Amino acid sequence: MAAPEGILCSKTNEWVLEDNNIVLIGLTDKIVEQYGDIVFIELPEIDTYFSKDEIFATVESVKGAGEIYMPVSGKIVEVNEQLINSPDIINESPYEAWIVKIQPDDFQNESQDFLEYDDYIEDV
Image (tube, rainbow, N blue to C red):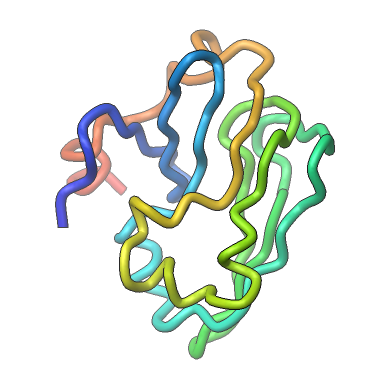
């Protein structure tokens, strides 16, 4: 599955998509495949601030639990509430099943380490 155009990936397996100073964040297909079927996700609260690399959510899957790291510093402006009752949406379509939207502090500087999708698939 190829990621949509413009998506960047972190080395901790989150994808980001910046649009008009709002950043959507989700899990890459590569990590979703490693987790197996995701059965639960704990989402953060709106208006919560997270620093880059801070744990902002957790997932549980048939293979265990995992932590999701904030790829850029910022404040949560929206959470994908569909995931509360249907976390399996992430399994079916990781690049449409965003987890949170944030208002980043400094996306340009903090996104320097991100990889284009094709490079991410080869390097991580």
